[in-house]
Length: 507
Ligand code: FAD
Ligand code: DLZ
Ligand code: SF4
Image (tube, rainbow, N blue to C red; front, side, top):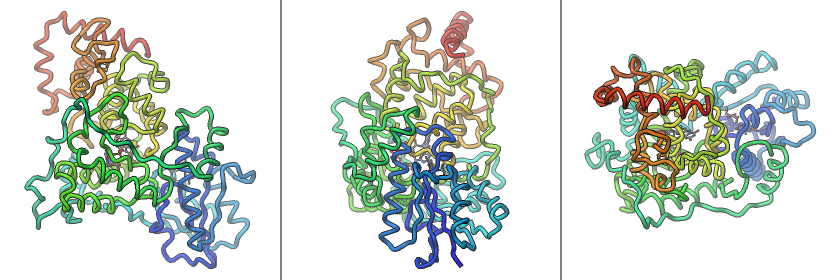
């Protein structure tokens, strides 16, 4: 009676449900690096190196904990190239009577796993992933009967459920949300601490050589490599954030500074998403920092909202709406992705800086993704399928369950407003207020039209004009049409003309 326990690359947690009840003397734990998963989209080189190194370190820790591990490296000559293929191989060589797996985080992989019982002729026990704070079933019953969902109400339920930052049944400080205090523009002379860095050990070194050889045609820089790859390192990175950055996290959450890609953010999404950190421990650690007077409420509440609010909320929507969510395209956007998303070869400095940082670090912080890279994709009418692929490829924290709702729901409004109440569309003045990018740009942010005007300015109005039918009844954006309607004909034509000319460059 040998049970095979399969651990996927984003299940690197000792508490993972697939290990519960494991008989270490008999059961086999399988982990495999496979070509199909590394290339179904052409992931950033640093993302692959991070994932493989974290997998190898996790497998090593299981061996040290006396588990019986079968680990397939990518360049193993017998590697079958897919999860299914590797399973088949191990089933041929061992008398396995059942497969145990924690529910995969992606719809695509879960659909495949559901076929394994028939394919392999043995029971497959698919267990819930209890590292999340809200199960898909619980989210679904919360969402039932609501036409539109709002993160804020979900978030309040989660605060109450887990008694986080609560005073009895009231939020600490009297308010649920301190977002209004989290929008300070950047200022000169901010002393932003260095991000977490670590030495490269022989495991990471081997993986980097492998990635350099096998994935040389993938996007992104492999070096420098500074990700944590073990749970201990990830905990160090979390503690470093709490000690050095949390204090200003709230204040400068939306700020962008050229050459400062890490700002006061936590840089833990990669670790949370692959299982090296658990959401609840991050929240409790940050809540404790507040209780000890080490961080202000706007920072602590803002951070906790991201994790128990947005992170759980987007996952809930993913499982509720898949597989249809993938096809959503409310604005019927059909433009191709401009090549500069891969090359950074654009005169728009905000985009250039965010793409260069993405290429170097496999990371960009939230407001860069939302208000620069995402805002442009929305205004330019880029087909959601290309935008989704790009976001899935380039970030080390990107798995479809979290990438797709953020891209299709949050930035592109492709679900027509199910996830967000209005499109996050903005002209150049927002980017100018929240960053220092405009001062080094070839375009002039104060100019509204003409060849040297900031493209965000006319693209914003062009987007509204072109989607009037779909947006004018939205009360959060409808009032912008009053401003548009007050413009004279000449101005409206200049907006349409400049937009057509600009977008014509990458039709
Ligand atoms: P911080 O700003 O320090 O926030 C703390 C944590 O909150 C993050 O680590 C993350 O776990 C969570 N969080 C914050 N915002 C979100 C959100 N909108 N959705 C889910 N979790 C959130 N996040 C991913 O983990 N993977 C993705 O593929 C991803 N794609 C995105 C695509 C777009 C277009 C946008 C606008 C956002 C995306 N996000 C994604 C959310 C967010 O940008 C990242 O979680 C964040 O930038 C990670 O950096 P950090 O750890 O420094 O986060
Ligand atoms: C993203 C990724 C990559 C690059 N490589 C692997 C791999 O070699 N083996 C594996 O088990 N998973 C990998 N993943 C993650 C999967 O694509 C997928 O996101 C998870 O299995 C969750 O469903
Ligand atoms: Fe971006 Fe416009 Fe500012 Fe240039 S002027 S950096 S394109 S917002």
